[in-house]
Image (cartoon, rainbow, N blue to C red; front, side):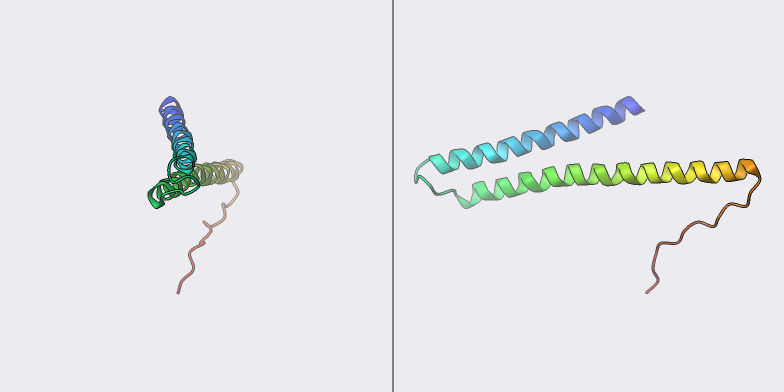
Length: 98
C-alpha cells in the first residue's frame, strides 16, 4: 500500500511541476509574441490556474501528512496508556457548537 501512496504522491507532484512550468512558459511566450509586451487574458488565466493547482497539491498533501502524523501520535499515546492500565483521556472535541 505504501508503494501505491508513493506513486500517487509522485504523480501529484509531477503534474504540479508540469503545470507550473507550462503556465510560466506560456506566459513568457505570450509576452514575446505580437503584440510584444502584452499578455493575453487567457494566458494569465492559465497561469493563475496552474499556480492554484500547484498550491492545492502542495497544501493538501502537507495538511494530510501533518494530520496523519498527529493521529498516529494520538493512537500511540492511547495504546501506551491502555497497556499501563491507565484510564485514557476522553477524545478531544474540537467542534464548536453554534
